[in-house]
Length: 279
Image 1 (tube, rainbow, N blue to C red):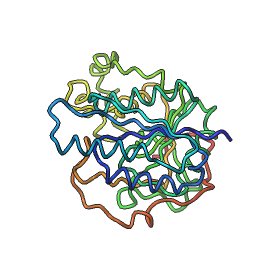
Image 2: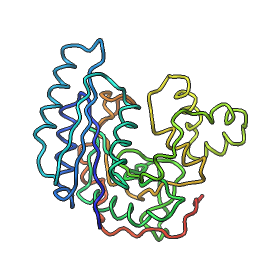
Image 3: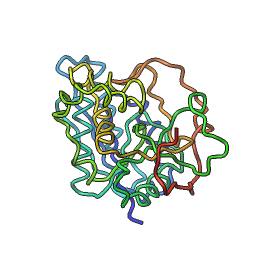
């Protein structure tokens, strides 16, 4: 199968980036995959420390090894988390039919690229699938029934700690949020959207009012608006090491360093054919 290119976004966290690249390079198919890296630029009031960290990130990126091809882009100005990701994914999807998306704080299982590529091919012609998620809820928050027959399930929510999509789904997204006023007049539509999580509508409101700089809530709404789903693994193929206060959208939390024991190593997952939301 034709392997999906990987697009990786970074900013000012060289230590996190090194761990992310180390894990990604150990993946099956890494050496055969194209890697695009986008590094956002400094804000106008950036401190000397931040400028140094961004420079370190750029140096790391310029010396990446272990992939079939490397293309990197360094921004002179700060684009911001939301627009940097939207622009970068759009750039890559103008060249390729599908893409795997990473950020600089995601540790991957060695089976991550195998799972993602298999799922992107398996569901490519299923128009109701808009994305493939590599991450899932942790077992202490979400228990898959023991009698469930598949290794993935259909979810109205996108889990964006390592994920993928197709150009023909991505480019139909309304990033201008022209739907917002109409949507906010219909409380039952809001209740339906919150089936993905009781934070969905709140995050959409925050995004519309400029209190957030996120792309994923709009992409999740794009799923909802089109009655589409994301394919999510029952056991996560990724682990987020950025929940330490260092990122744009995260809180401080204790990082568990045994993440390799927690993430999925299954290279032959059983995919679900009949797509439905299992209550």
